[in-house]
Length: 132
Figure: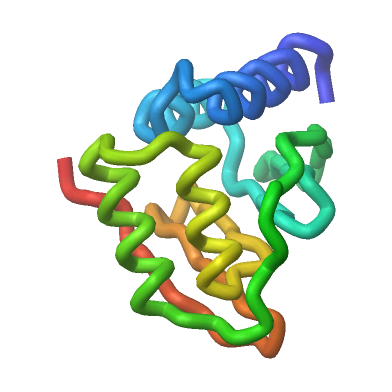
């Protein structure tokens, strides 16, 4: 992966963590860099970005200040998504809430226009991107 693309991935990760860029802005910047999808691992505090050609790059991100709950609650994940979409919470608060809801990682598919949140036992909550 070329240095310009990895710089964009690092910048998007840091801007999300600092709440200086919101999700639709991140998606637009990643799409412009030809990112197909990314995997956000809450337990490992890292995001791995994938291009259509199979190239990938992993970027460290903020570490949770709360443990990930043992039980997955799709309703609580959904509530955190709604609060984030409304601009009521920061990205870090969003991550804290989905961890408290038992989410261990999530996958964002730019190509599929959805995010899928996963629990420890393979439970999942699928969230289509909002219509614009």
